[in-house]
Length: 298
Image 1 (spheres, rainbow, N blue to C red):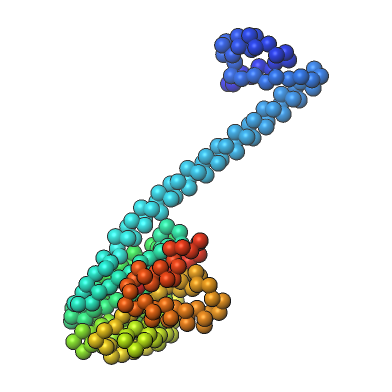
Image 2 (image 1 turned 90 degrees about the vertical axis):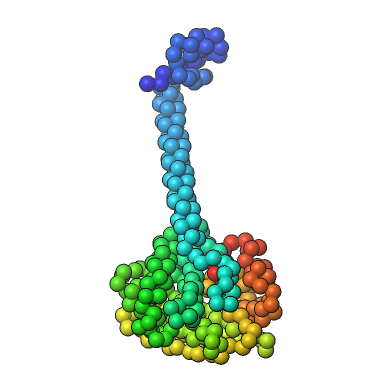
């Protein structure tokens, strides 16, 4: 029990004697004697309130530190699930960067060789951001591995998206996912692709310039029987395919969506031979004051 001395005179030696004898602290009071009790009570109540506030702040800070620690552990797990970047598969070079708005990202990227020698790749954007969205990317990684086993029964990218949707619907998630899925056949030099409402559109660059590929489809994890389309394009000898998550729109200065798309197309076209880092620099990702939404560049 703390013992507080109320001093009515400024006598340092007396106060020191009291403190040496075991008093916790002292209050100096200079006023009418009948007001002394009220003064002491108010002082103690204010002190108690102040100490409670400090304790609450400390508890909040401790919880925040624990939450941040957990998030960073989750971030390391998520990073370990991403494929190596840059990487080479059957002569194709893949490169990507993810920039979360918080610590963990709801954007995900994967690429892998199919059993028939073709190479599959996708970019996915889970609705929302933060830990709840990031946890779903763990499912996507698991599904990438299972897709290899199911691939012989899935004849097109549209059927692959339908398979992804069927698997996700079993989990009754509170999030939906947009995805662009492509399969490159090096022998026929062709790209087959399908979109599950992924936006912005994927950009195909070649010596003649750059163009958006078809968009459309329905998000994954929302509808029991969505319809997806497969598209096929011939690939020139030299080309690059560039994809973004929609968070990139948040840092572009243009006002309208049409102008933002035009800006993306222009940036990709002018940097198609410069590599990923140059494109990210031109986008201004690293100099943005804030990143309101996750950004993926693939």
